[in-house]
Image (cartoon, rainbow, N blue to C red):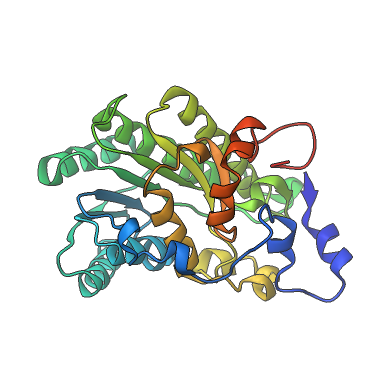
Length: 309
């Protein structure tokens, strides 16, 4: 595990790229959308697909994922979140980007399995079987030292980030089946925080490590589905800004993460299934290193050395 304060100390004055450099797997890195992941590229088209996005009422759910899949002209985008009012704003944005895309907004608490199941019943009834799931819903409810923390706040982060991801993923798997007729992808939002010891972020960091490993289980149990853990980068969202000391490093755009998610949902990305990918990494270099990644089992959580080595 790497300690965030140690990285910052080594760099001296705050370097906005310090976390990107520390987490870099590819030689080239990005902080904004670039040609290879531009969701308007014909080879990244999401036509014919139904895309489900959790936490879609604001932040990454709205400006990264809903916006980018709309630009890729998904047939339908399902927006899941608790706030009906905020969902309607996301829906308006999607329709302004891609008027032909159908939008289904469902107010749901991802920690309530029965509510999640009803949502997927509605998806099947109105739109058919989805091909893409983006598990984006998450919180940072707890930001205290372990000795000072409120147990309920600490556990709330686990409930939303881990149980919520489990609930939605299981419901999705049950309707797509073990051998989906169409290429299917699950993108789980994780974080570089999952392999750092962050300041007063024990609960959040542990959830992201759990999600990364959960994705590896998905790959083993459902090899026909491409399941990837995606670190979205350092994006100035409401949740990210709640840790104010990170503000100097929040320089990534929402389009970077969204474009990467569209790329991961396009073509054959099976070589990345069960693995951790950061939005900052150059996807063309990832493809060029495909055989190395698979043969050496890179980008997985291992005990022998730094994460991903």
